[in-house]
Length: 198
Image 1 (tube, helix red, strand yellow):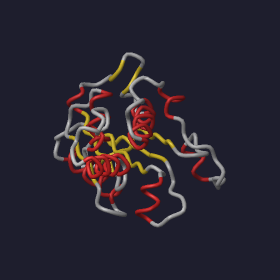
Image 2: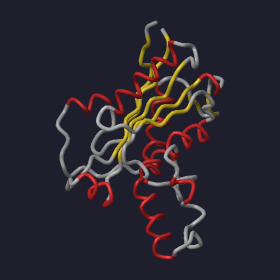
Image 3: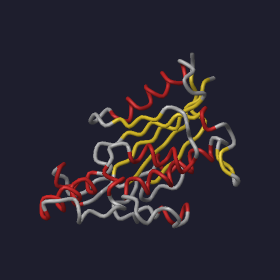
Image 4: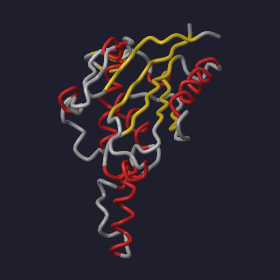
């Protein structure tokens, strides 16, 4: 079985097209504004990684011809979702834990934050938003997460569990991620491809 990439999406500072990846990106590039790309609706209570993923996924699905003005152009059950992220929603998880620790109970936790504490929140949000009802998997196993997600996508497509797969990698730049990684700055962005059976 051979697979092909039929769509690409990027949500990276200073990058608007895949060709931009070939040129140096300035360190002072403005952060991506997901609302400017896909509108504000549905973004208000989403963490930064999920917002970036939604914008990036829309671009990749559109580029592959799977998403049009009226929505998905193929049956939703034929599209798998695989997301790679090691720190995607860690800021929300830490915030919820801090609130529970400070109050000794869950009463102070916002009901809008609770779903965002799920480890699969990014992949499930993409599936719900775009009607993708194929296999859904979140990969978070370190430096190779993105490559592993692509490998899982080709395995799912090769085994005919899905005709195509949206594969997306995303990491946010926020205080909690910087504390955990020891880095002064993290690339705040996402990249996606659509993998299809040839």
